[in-house]
Image (cartoon, rainbow, N blue to C red; front, side, top):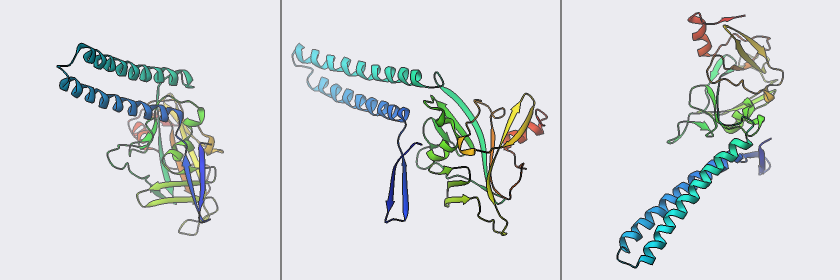
Length: 256
């Protein structure tokens, strides 16, 4: 698991934090070093203007500092990129997508929107753009990173075989197998996945949703349509992601 920091507040509230992944740390450092280099360039430029009448030695030192900083930042950026590509299980950057829907007793659940200037929830590599789509854009260092459950971890929730927590605009929603719907119907957490093969597609009910790894496709379809449904127990769902619906309406795909 990626959870490394767990604490109990007054013995009641559990606080869970995720350790930043190696690729996140490297990308964050790349931004910090680049900003630092630009700031240093600005300072050196000002010094060059102020000290323009000084000796050749001073000018040489300033020029040498420009070169050293530029080379250091370039070497770090290039080296970190090569390192991530070498360490990745994908052999380099990938761009995978999977659509998903969450249903709570027949009512669709929308995850919390991006905040501030960000256009995404999650990380740079694994995120959602308020479009009901899991985006994996970059390198993956571990197969765990491509799990649907890992996506929910990154947006501040959880997905287990019989439990899900989802951050929404109205707060966290937690659903557990064994609870009931408002009409007192016994309910369970179930996850169904639609996969396509050529012009046909079919659905499968997952026995171990927590371990499910999304299919390696950039377009949906053929990328996965994942339906997370809390409700009465059944073997098939009647829900279908919008892009699969569009493909069916266009006559491009049929369900088998």
